[in-house]
Length: 397
Ligand SMILES: NC(=O)c1ccc[n+]([C@@H]2O[C@H](COP(=O)([O-])OP(=O)(O)OC[C@H]3O[C@@H](n4cnc5c(N)ncnc54)[C@H](O)[C@@H]3O)[C@@H](O)[C@H]2O)c1
Image 1 (cartoon, rainbow, N blue to C red):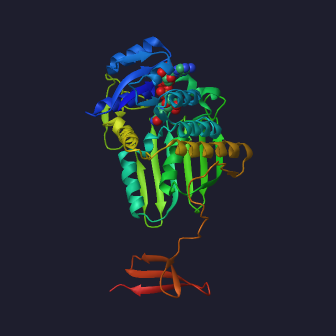
Image 2: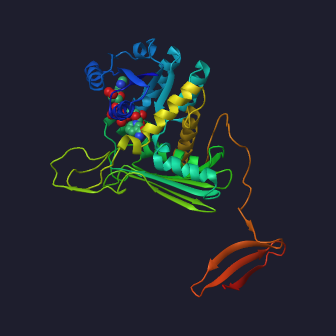
Image 3: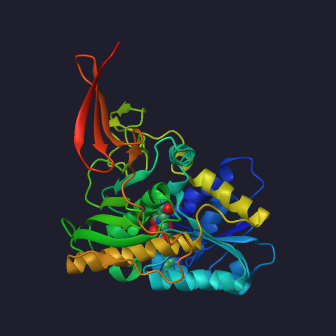
């Protein structure tokens, strides 16, 4: 597959590093950048045969099969429109839109054009995440009751992120989009997100948008998603998830202090994304593009195009994430739970089926089983008809 890149900045280089890292059959061949010198530099660095400062020209070339959008958030819609016009499959970085309305228009554009719209949500493709999802799907942790995802770092690297108009918001739209989709995957994408309660604050930076936010997302099956994001965190990039199920628990630490520690007096350069220093005790990441999910993500995207199937993350998913973020901003304003407005929900319409109770025998539910320090086995039971709660002690032996 031949790939064109729109944009030549931070994420374009991460994506390109991932695309050229392996002996793959998919080839990055061209790049668009508004600054022709940067386009040429990117083309030289990655040995691309074509570069231009004309987006339509890059998207429209006959040798391009798929286009990757690596542009600031306010330019995603126009770039998707250029791909739809050229009838080229399109993979768009996160967040899909600045708002749900923008994301919905992008979803409509790709569906009307009959092209694939892949949502580049890399953190739903990290090796640890994919393995966790397999365990969740296998039933290892039972029904997921609560899924929390946290992303915090000292703030983004380009001016446009800090400008509300271009970015569409602060840490919530920038980092919350990752966390929301991670939690949504754990809970189950077929389950409808119903309402959101959110706190936002501008704690440190002189900007209009929020630099910190915490949100709760209620799902139709009674499960809870939670996101914690900040552009004020000092010490690197904190990417952690916690999942609580009826039969088990998953804790993931995806980036900082994951078993690779190095001390340096500071003679070297880059350490890892958002590392704040190159001296002292440092926490490098072995294969960043793989550990951040880019490698698995592109494999899934290109396989989906080739096999005419859906990738794990689609424009529809990007739209749902934007709809949740819209509700979160609304809740931060009103201080109330706000409904998630979704046009054309495609998942389950089942409502909450109540607590996930375990039957002990024909008369009792099992509330709790515990082995005490004395060796005693204790059962706490509830009568199915009378509601009486009692304890039954069984001596081990
Ligand atoms: N983990 C991730 O998935 C991840 C990480 C970082 C950024 N992103 C996303 O990637 C996108 C780009 O972010 P970035 O970090 O690469 O930003 P960046 O500032 O490093 O690069 C942006 C690129 O867009 C170009 N650009 C800027 N303004 C333009 C304009 N008006 N017209 C045409 N081109 C313009 C710049 O020249 C540059 O090539 C954003 O949507 C961001 O949210 C995703």
